[in-house]
Image (cartoon, rainbow, N blue to C red; front, side, top):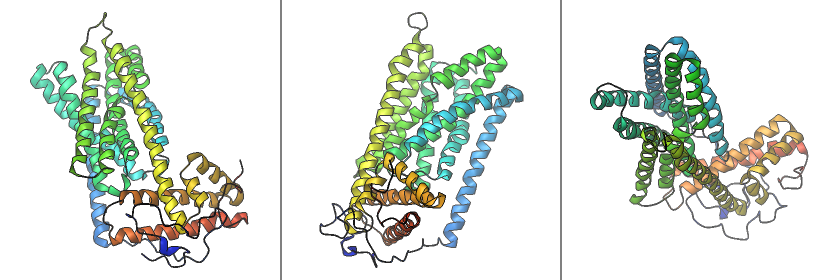
Length: 425
């Protein structure tokens, strides 16, 4: 790739090269910034055929999601009443806001595209629920004589059907935009969004049924159980699949694809134990509370610990690869440290806004996002052959970082390097 105009450019190796850059490059000192003009390489325009294919795929997926969601909601309305469904929709939205905020908080280093997040939500709420409703209903007919779902239906058929249907949504994200799924954190986020969408529609079903069948008292009990006590249940189950896919993407060799299979088995098992707890008569009907304390709480705590550790790993990945670019003179050492630290990123944004207004802050945000994209791309191609498209994209991002730096530094009248000194406490 070309590094025209960048000091130390000869030391920049393409993505996929392992190890640190050679020493003795231009940006080793924190108070020295690279100088010289950089002509950005514009993002290569997609061909008309690729744009048409993307539009067609997006349209088909949107139609499938809307059709599935409409079908499920229509069944719920027929089973209950329109007014009950309206109340249930409002109540079901509350845990979505809470749980969704938690997963978005986790996704801080490289925010996922809103379109893909909406796809994951839509798949969980529209496609996975439609599949589960059809299969579970048929299983109830065959196994329970169309009566209330029995142990086999709830603890075996439903978990297997629902988790497979939700897992397909994460696989769909991987097939649609492979480059957006970089590891465990991304797998957790997309799996969580699929689970949130599924739980939302399922809550609409249970809330509306309880309101029609038992009035507001029964609705209050069901709301507490599903929206207060266990709002993370479905996202947690599906999160195991996301972790498995994320691990597979960061490993080498054909055996890495055993991770998603293991993740699916964990999700089905946890889901089955959760559903089956309602049939356990222990200590006078305390089966569900015992399973909640002994299973759900530890799983939730473990998931939180895993998510935090995965995000810390992302920080190390970002710092390691950005240090390579800093050693070559494309960015500075303090900038690499800033991008790899969430507190420093917040401080840098505040400083940019104070120094140059909203425009400088927006440039800082974009700088941070692109720098993370650069680091994750390098990690994604580490140890693998790199094609010309990846090299061109790397060059475009590097050039864009130079221009963005000028936008958030120029208004301050300060030095051409973002160090800790000009950033107020």
